[in-house]
Structures are given as structure tokens and as C-alpha cells.
Image 1 (cartoon, rainbow, N blue to C red):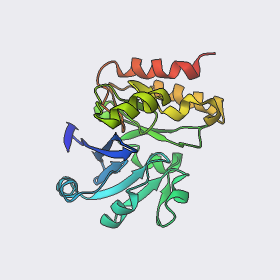
Image 2 (cartoon, rainbow, N blue to C red):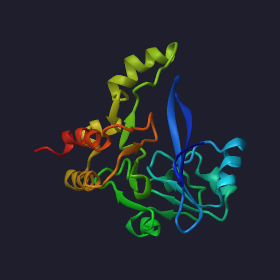
Image 3 (cartoon, rainbow, N blue to C red):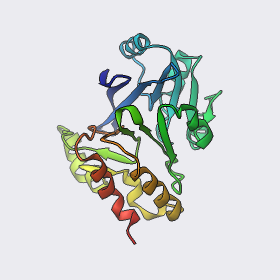
Length: 232
């Protein structure tokens, strides 16, 4: 894992989307009250588990967007004392997952000493909960923002990226590709209210789950991406 702040670490990973390697990132925060908060967990390898265990006990494991659910059970089994928090669409995708709590305004307030939180309204396909880690001035997102600058594919994966993935929206710094399709946004006013609230937060970086962390002009970058939804 790589340390970004006194109490914040990230772990880079990837998964296959057809022939394409899709970058993934898990974010780990040591909470002011003690315990580790694990955002969007990826494969729990022996090496990663050892690194996590060195930091302290895991108290919270988050599935912060409906599509990020594949490894939740592995982490729940490995850390039975941790509480698993999930967005509303995950239980249907992981019916064997038990003992979880839904991510909502009440449960996200559990970490109010460390985070501000906001739930994406109007887009039930994602139901994403985003976080501002105030101590590090980091906006932590799952699918809201991707960053594929500097992400190189090779061979057939490069061809698929150029002909399929990039036209779908998996290119450069972008919003979640499904958001490009208006039918995915079921309540525009709720979605815009969410975007405007997040833009008011004070952050210097965006820790994305897909692609490179955005360290430069983070607030301006988010504002630019949101313009297509908030104008008019």
C-alpha cells in the first residue's frame, strides 16, 4: 500500500473487463475513533491482508457504489468484527452477504469526525456514496469520476480500448460512463443537488477508484465534469 497522508493509504489493483485491464483502487483510512475504514475493497491477497493488519483492526468495510461488490464477502469473512456497509443495490447482487448495513445519511454520520458524506441522488444504477476526508483534503469517489490518463493497454486490449471502451466514455478524465446516458439519471434535480453539494466541499485531490489519483486542479476538474449536468 502507498501512504498519502498520516492516516490514509491506497492499494492499487486491477480487474479484467473482457480483455481490458480496468484499474482499481482501495482506500484505507485510520479513523479518529480507532479502527480502519476500508473503501471499495479489492482482492484480499495474503500480502494486502498483512499490510492492513499492520495498520490496525478493520472496523468498517464499504461497498460504496452498486457495482463494487465482488470482494465484500471475502473481507467480511476475514474481518468478522468489522461492519459491512453497502449501497442499496448490492444486497441483490450479493444475496449471501449478511449482517450488513445500508449506506445512508444516518450510517455515514458514524464517521463524522473524519468525513463529510453525500449520497448520489437520482441515479439508482449507482447509488454512490462519496466522501470528503477532511484531514487530507481528499475527495474519495468510486464511479463518479474516472481518470484514464496514463493508462496504457497492449495488444488486443489496446484495440478494444480504442474501438469500444473509449467511445463508451472510458477515456481521459471522465464521469462514470453510464452517466453519459440520460436515461440512467432518473431524477435530474436530485442528481444536480448532489453534484452541487460535493462541489462546495474543500478538497485538493480526488482519490478515484478507477485510474490515476487527481492531484492537480482537483476542484476545477470536478466542476468541469459536472458542467454538462448542472448548466441549464
